[in-house]
Amino acid sequence: MNDLSIAKILEAMPHRFPFLLIDRIVEYTVYESITALKNVSINEPFFPGHFPGHPIMPGVLIVESMAQATGMLAYYSSLARGESGGVYYLVGVDKARFKRPVTAGDQLILNAAITREIRGIYRFDATASVDGDVVASATILTTEKTPEI
Image (cartoon, rainbow, N blue to C red; front, side, top):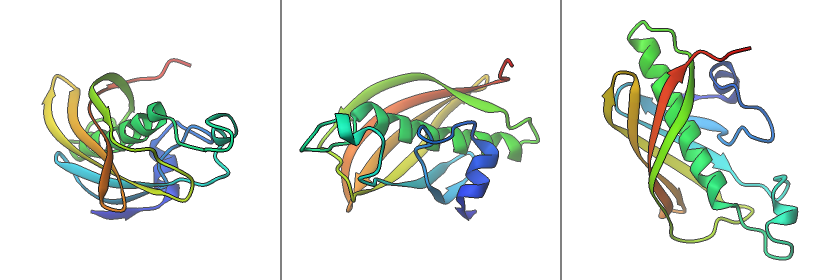
C-alpha cells in the first residue's frame, strides 16, 4: 500500500505537535516494511535550544521519528490480522548509531523492516537517511497496549 497522508497518520497515532515526528507514509507492506518521511523545518520547536547558531535535530528525536514509523507499521500489520490496531509503545532501542547531524531543510527518509514478532512484541531494523545517506540507525522494539485514561 502506498502514500498515507497526514490525516491517516493522525487517525492511527496518539502523537500531536510538537511530538508527531512523521509527516507522511510513502509506502508500507504489512508484516514487512515501511518508508515514511519527516520534513525538518527551521520552525521545529527544538532548534532554538539545540543549538543556537548551529541548529541540529537531537539524536533522540531522530530515534523517535524512526520509532513512530515502526509503530505505524505495527498498527497496520495488526489491523491486517483483524486485531485491534491499538496504540504502540516503544519498549526498547538497541544499537542506536548516529552518522551525521540532521539540520533544518533536511528531509528524513525513515525506513524500517520487521525482523521478528513474538507475542505482540515487534522488533525492527530502522534507518533514517538524508539525500540517500544513512544518518542514524537502530533496532527498535514496540508493543501494543491499551491506553489508560
